[in-house]
Amino acid sequence: MSSCKTQNIFHDQPDKKQAAFVLDSVFLYKPDYQHIITTDNKVNISVWGQDELSIGSVYGIYNSNEVYGKWLLVDANGNIEIPKIGTMMVRGMTIPALKDSIKSVISQWIVNPIVDVKVMNKEITLLGEFRNPAVIHVDKDNNSLLELVAKAGGFEYYANLKSIKVLRQDGQKVKIANIDLTLASDEGTRNIQLRPGDIIIAPSKKNKEFDKRISTIIPIATSATSAAILIGAF
Image (cartoon, rainbow, N blue to C red; front, side, top):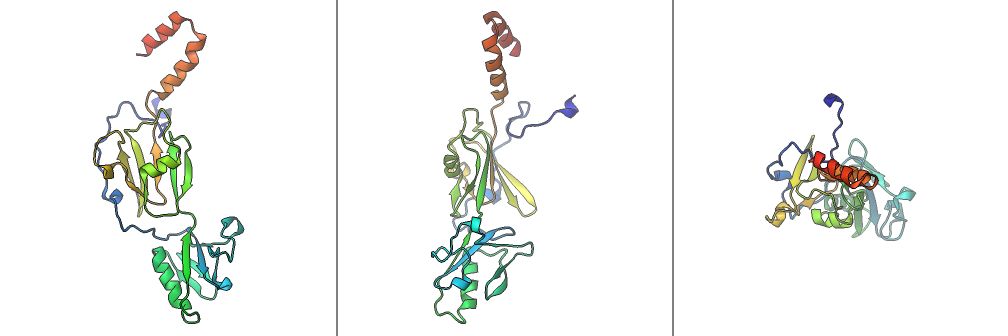
């Protein structure tokens, strides 16, 4: 029977001790962190006064709402197709670097071009015991764990604050940070810096399922039966 048992990743395993709190170097705070453009990023480009070069312009030339398709998708080869410029490799570039590259090309026919670039699908996912678990869009690069928790409405009652998990893609590997928000330790080891693509998991306390069963049983049981159930459970 045990071989058929499924595991709930949002539930603590009662027979396992909490792992020692060790923060992998990939999660350390970097004040100069900038988002690196990658495959499947949606990029819009704005060039002031140049309708034919703008895709989803923030300057009011186009409606930047992606529902209307005003963005360029970074393809599997890391390229986008820019009007009048053609194919440009953008994977691995920061947004300032891409701005400079576009300016360098169009400066051939435009004097002092004003260029803005935006990645539209920078997102962080929150799963588990949050009041409003969701995929949250972030515009800025420097985001903190508690900031995203606040955007999700905070934690539910059964959230296990001793075992908050942050998953981050690091090359071909996925690194996991186990955060204990109840520790009175250095703020930087708890309220860590988050990046687009991160997944935050708030597991439930191990007594959640027990409480749910008891809340269902007790209203329909006699006081004596309820006491017996409780004694037997412990």
